[in-house]
Image (cartoon, rainbow, N blue to C red; front, side, top):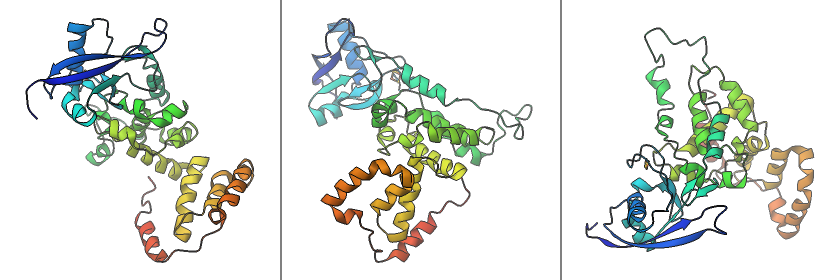
Length: 322
Ligand code: FES
């Protein structure tokens, strides 16, 4: 990428709740080298063009997590996002505050909802007396035990995953990707005495609201991969308590009915998810589907090569119950 300065049209969200009637986008035309981070561009705007622009930042080194915002629609750290690739892909750089949190002013959001969800998972060790910390040895775990959660401590709580998450947008009962990744960290810690309680509780406190879209993993600047940790939590919750919620019953039912026929059995899956009585509110929709596409409601015959599918299922069967 050349180092010469290029024209950079920067369109920045501006809004002061209680003062402005509605948000606006203000355009600033800058000349910057393609490697210039978006944060540097915003600071240049504030220093040279518009001192009223509000934004949050601190380290400028992708460490503190303060500068997360939406850049051309993606939740990212402004201090590690260069303007060049954004211009190449979009022809401009549009900067907006993070989603799923109320705007305080311009690019600054109120992170209270994000931190409340973190607090809700009780992010601290509840020590197991059978696994005490020996005197003078701060970490009694084996390397293999530490390996199980080695990526979650990389999280810098920037909230980019929370901003990118459509499940948070759709339902405030969903704790969000960061809180669940942190919960995973304590669930797999062998010193934690509350593993079972944590798994039982989270089954009814939003775990199954995850849409499995993986946008959180895409947004995470530290490769924590929250969507994979949420998948692990779901597996562990089912192993610990069985499929007790519609979400877990749906997952288990989906797997078992595909295993049985090699294809999805829609009507059976509704019964597996909601139970016989729970199906009653679904009846009008079932009738509509039956009228429009009766083949969906029929029980399909087994596919060819079902034995091969069975071998795949057997290979992925959980071996140690975790
Ligand atoms: S300013 Fe600290 S992560 Fe960007």
